[in-house]
Image 1 (cartoon, rainbow, N blue to C red):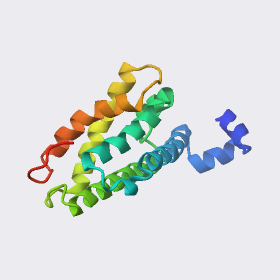
Image 2 (image 1 turned 90 degrees about the vertical axis):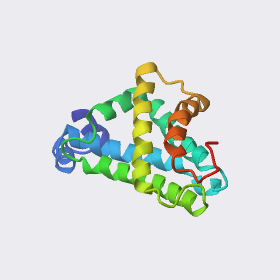
Image 3 (image 1 turned 30 degrees about the vertical axis):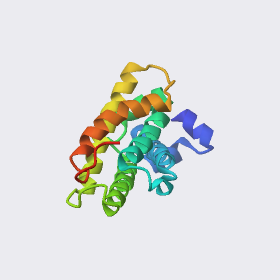
Image 4 (image 1 turned 60 degrees about the horizontal axis):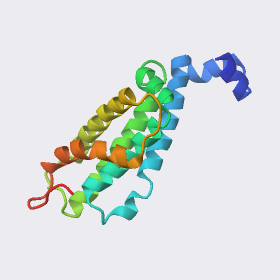
Length: 176
């Protein structure tokens, strides 16, 4: 905390006042980083409306996984400690942002007739995130250093995402 306060040009007391604790600071930083990564991963999705929903979610979550896994040590710290204790509202807001962007993407696919109308977009967004989270853990366990290629990441995500989406595709459509 001494180093962070010195780097920020504030007193240690001011830092604690605004973050509450080391965990509070971690949660604030993670919330900001995760939101920025999410925004970058989903940037330009509206321009891809002609692309099949399976490809859209794989591209967005693939980019998110690439951004996080290209900083493996930071991601490991975040995954181990963020979201608990003081300041947990910051990563929670970022997670809700991710789920909202995903649900919006799925709603768009429903409106275009790609997904059945009965699908609960928010629940499906949770399911896709859970698959992503498992893959993120697998990636970090398998690769102690970054060097993820986008093609490798998207290949790893495609199979579980396609299985999840298959039950919600309109009749006559199969995974892309």
